[in-house]
Image (cartoon, rainbow, N blue to C red; front, side, top):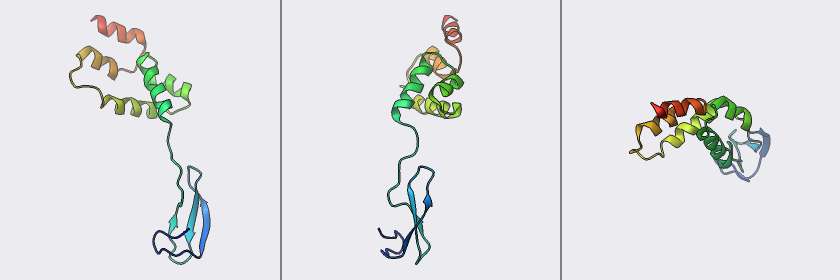
Length: 113
């Protein structure tokens, strides 16, 4: 294990853990703190797809958050990021449905109008 700043291989000591649980190291020569083998943070893609599927089924963002043990704002961010992948030529009724955060009955009422 070597320091990424001064490339020293000696005097490398353990210096706590990151939020993801990876071991942090500190170089006693230059004081640089680094993580030699960082772990990935965030949620699996499967949880994101489940949130999207539940949203398309008409569940609210808060309910999806409770079911998946994720903050509702995180779910909203996922939904908004997936909206960027929608084709630009969708009918307005589908775009309105994608923007809503409500019950399925509310979505169906909008389609009837």
